[in-house]
Length: 164
Image 1: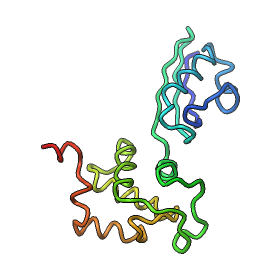
Image 2: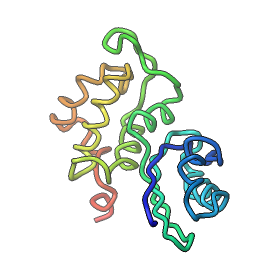
Image 3: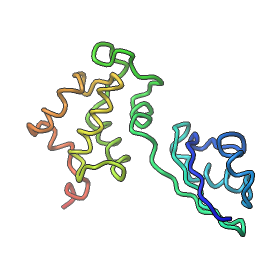
């Protein structure tokens, strides 16, 4: 009875308890081996919620697919805060540099609809806006306009383009 399990686990901190243990318990896999593999593969996302897919076979073999944490988790980690603002258009909880926005955009690029870093950064700024995070000391709502005006062309360039 092969199958697939999808869960969110804290990066580098998975354990045999919920949510993973109860899902894996009835399967033929070695739960501790799965937990160890997940922790090894998610160590870089320490403490952030990471989407994990475990595909297992009847013989007990398994494969782990590690997704990218939600954009909001990457922003919280990069900017160093735990909870977004209850009034994101009035009360700001953190400020990010354009370089930090670019870093999050690059980390999240495989999950975003954007085709380049510049547009990915604009998507990330939308999440900044809903969390109450400013960018370069200004409201994230104005970031898109500044990007469109070319203000950050020197920063928001794909690394492949920068070396070409």
